[in-house]
Length: 156
Image (tube, rainbow, N blue to C red):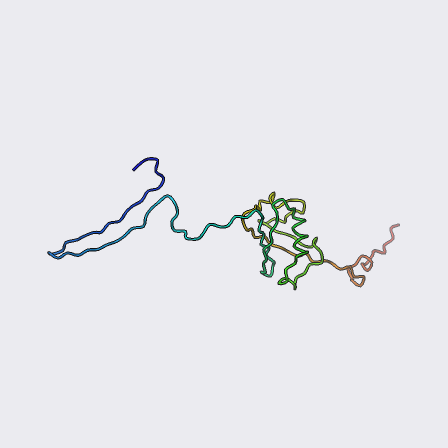
């Protein structure tokens, strides 16, 4: 076989065995071995120029959005807020600033881009989306600064 050949193959043949004057024939085949993976029958994935970002909520609900690689995380959160999926209607945030995206264990900064966070075009990436609760300022709250106990001590 030529040294420059990158794939090799093994052919099978029929085997004939003579036993006690009678003749029996057994056939077998071996798979062809080659330099390419022949076990994969799936078609290659379609490549796309956008980032496909699947966002996963704490509840387990997920939705896939498409963005440009140079979109900032702030723009991503704004667009997710504006295009909030109907199946997430029970978890609507008050504003886009209440959304946090977690990828590879890090909260992504609003000024960074998808590409700088190693979220590239041509593949689907899964990230977690958390909704930060808003704190309402209620004057009836016993822990508010106005209702907090104050020291009445006098230093002489």
